[in-house]
Length: 508
Image (spheres, rainbow, N blue to C red):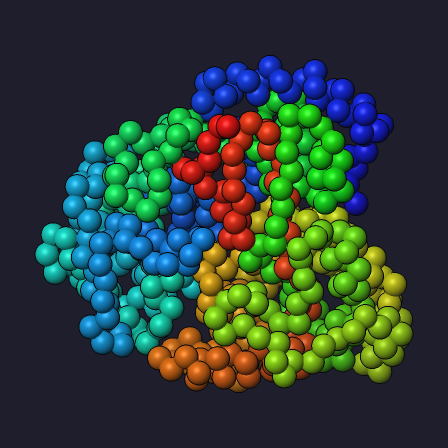
């Protein structure tokens, strides 16, 4: 649990009343919003990181071809003004005129073609291959019209074009590549980067030339400073002292304490982010015990998911029985077994598998440390001597992909894509993050991803999700609730996709 334990709400309120007011008022007068996040992106180019802060930065600095309204889920034109399917594997888009990148380059078809062809080429090693590996190639039809040829039928293409697929300036990107884009990012978005100190902060300023017809409204906050502060206690201290105006992913107990503080506000809600334990059960796993389904089922029975939701995760979260978020197209737990919390049964299964005395294992994690520590406690209670290895995400991911880590506390936000193709297949379709390599599961997911018949898609996903659960390849845990703490002077809306939209945030 959190180490943050003030002497009492009254003392905390007195400290905050003395310390917050002047800095917060100065920020408001200067029209600057200071925000902190606990993860550090290895590269702010959206195609070369897969952490949530990368998604947040990406949607402010860059634009996508299509925009999905978070309130209505309606698709709207952003860098594209219209789109149409020519056939099941060919999409054409008309592009917006008069848009400029932050460096002055004019936006047109060359930018779309170059960006999509570059990131879809596996040789360029985008870390988000699952977002682009359905693209065969992009072609320029004229200055403001492009065609995208798909490798396979992929009905979710529009959802991806409205989410993680941003557009880079072709001339600049060809010159500097992902490394240069990280150092000096250039997009068309509502904010432009004025300073990036890797690992420390990134400073944004309102783009005065942002196109007026964008579905993203013109920002009213002039400057946004995003600070990378891995330590949650430091974040809390900073917002109490007025050094920050907004933080997110605050632990529920800390959020409850901060509610009593004048000049600060707390809001929360369920997000699309799912949490699960991933066990490498393929033939190359460094933990051979995970090859035995009885061991994997024992771990499913060892975790009290409902208690964790109630005591650690917070209001709004829900227990999950399959590895997807319930609102995503194709997500269901129909036909999937439910593993009740039963430590006695867990011990019996371990003994049956030949591990009556348990075994030692490293559990890798990168966020929600208090939750990971609770899981370690549950595992040790049934004889599995788990050792927590807590890392930054890039190191965590690299250990898993290299096959060095067999047991992971995973969270996944699907890049806010509301389709199962953005969640379950990432971990079960023989891609970089698949630690299972089950061809039956893969084939069902391929069918779900590629069918144009919605009923057939749902049926395939239902079978795949039930199979994953029956074979206990993971321990589905729960959805996450995100708690935001902010200056009470901010008018801020929280959305389930974990994307703070600074372009619509304003001062009261």
